Image (tube, rainbow, N blue to C red; front, side):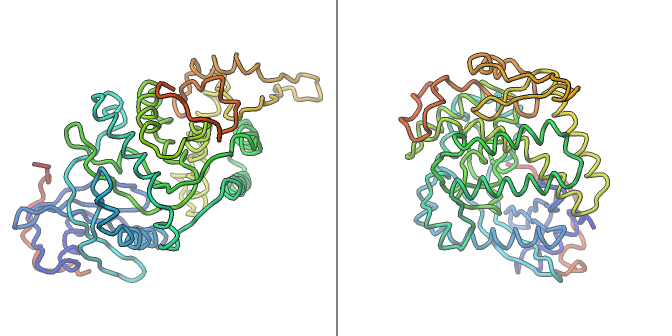
Length: 389
């Protein structure tokens, strides 16, 4: 059941003693998992409330609470952005609602970010590099997931098998993803701390600065490509190139040569994960939406000759099937790179990867250019937009 901002304001008063909201507005979040609101209190302070819609989402917020506690002041001081601080929490049945102190800045769409100034683009790349350079002990001490490259690849293969059992994934996509997952040369990377849910709605921006990063529910040690998936899905090659350049320049560890390929896989495979989630929830609307997006992706790739994610060529079979002898091999590497830049595949457009990518990912780095809803404290709240000053 969806909670309105006015209800979340009531819960916030129970979570933070002395909090007296005077204005409330909705806040961007994942609508399938959370209800969120921004509050303005009687002292002019701003707060954010996140309320889970189901137990799994509540567990994610509780995990984030542990993560944020692990970011001691010394670590936070080294970051080029601010992080959330939990001000209070209320448990109602199996669900826990959290109230966070307000962070300056606001979210921007991918379109707005891709058209932003060079300074802001640099800030985005620098922020991502700072996350991936966090000490791995931060994750291990919080008892959070940690994956080697092979473990991560196997986990994704298991997820692919699970998605295939739905019977709703287009065969061409299953073949494309399976081939990429079986191409071991693609999976030679150095694991690092990964945000796990990085996208435009978790970046707060003010002017030309990234002021804060939110949404720390999926922190882990794993593949840095997962945090680049939202960039690849933006279908803005110049934006991707610029962010990646600044990211590369600011990383202590040399990123591998295939990070954008795996980011493309992550962006595409997110649709399959969304389908599995919809099927598990038996949400017919979500299932229909997921099927439509998957069919669109498969159709775009078939129509525009989408670039293979894997490094090794993929053998593709025509509609008549191999029994008719109509088997076509993938184009040579040079031709595939050309397709990579020209394919108009909205969900997974990826910028060119130099021909030198065939080298091991451990080679030299790319050059710079490459509770109480009836609380009387909220009885007289006026519902208005809580705009940033």
